[in-house]
Length: 302
Image (cartoon, rainbow, N blue to C red; front, side, top):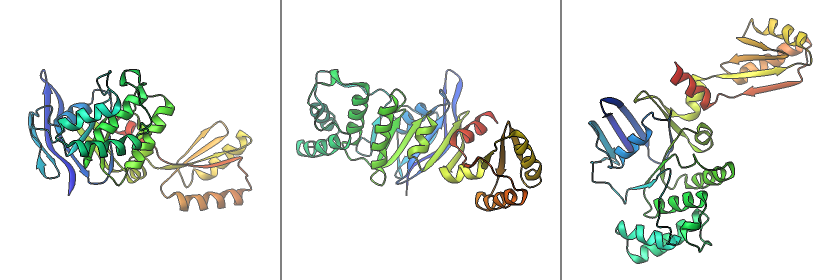
């Protein structure tokens, strides 16, 4: 069973099509990266999935149950917006008790789960009012609140966009710990965050899913691998390029030769043999793996 299925989703604002026949399937248990340019429609998609915004047409199902506008499924979905809001005069446990009560949890359930989720996000020893929290602490509390009902699906909308590098690193580590416990839909424009934690990815472009699937497989099949060989002198680099270009597409950048390859293991052995035969010794020899950024730019720029 898939966690989420969106079929032919359409949504317009003021006559402008934001989502245009969007199809998306999110496997249960995955950490799914949902990426796109700012304004591509990521937040609109999430709000429709949450039942907070009506679609013009299309189908939305969550664990095979239809999602309807105005009828959210609070026990099924945890939601972390990019800027979570709280009552500043409350403390963390008070905020979670308020949220848990609104979701229909008993006082005992709230107490037990609050201890678990606050420890999970590193706020179990914090006993001050939320108004004095840093941005990173508020994001952690937002995640704790989203996880309170132990939802099978966690939806996060740009959760790390305003955090500093240390805050982002800590937050991504928390997401890594959630792997296997819940399905995570992670919407962001920060591609490095997706590469750090996601196993599946979808690229939203012009209102449709332009590409979707296993992240590593997509990078390998659509972007490709390359080897970078650096030589002490440009003359050596040019000599090696003249030999290598008979077997691989090459590019010379000062004293560096870049070779585009399809099978990195086989090509690596052949490159080493070529170096030995030509009696050339590089000062640097590096396999460059395909990146999500490269794949993303290829999709959105055509």
